[in-house]
Image (cartoon, rainbow, N blue to C red):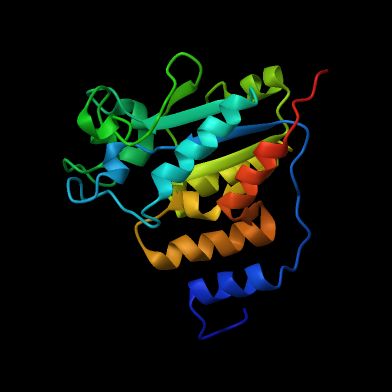
Length: 225
């Protein structure tokens, strides 16, 4: 194992400045998947589980969602919430049992609500209550992408080291191209945030500025099959 005294932030900055892999690039049709932008994870000062990395994250996500809708590309929002017993959280919910624990995000609770700053089109956008880390695990997301002929998945949300990474790995595993706009993902701590951006950039995804994604969507021409 190579050792280094560099921080995760520095390692990510280096790989951005001097990429060692070519990009996957955008394919024929992209979808936007916004991971768990709910109050349990975004209401800093209200819930101890919440965090913020870029203060403009929600604004950027709204811009992306608007751009994707304008080109008739799917916009997906996921959230985690569990039944009153918490049994549908499975073994994931067995490590702690406090009011802040994962399995105690109950359906219909304030912790399960999407952030008030988000602009969600409830008539058009796809909303998925997921129970595990990946947005693909035991949901219909993959079949929806097949129906919509999606081949590229843009992933935002949190946490970078948790549900975002899990979704990105599953995106690649299903042979979709993965794109991560770096200003649009967040984590509780700096080190796992940048370590996972670094790792995803090398292995699983194109980690690029949100401005590049917005520019692509502005010029994107829908494909008629």
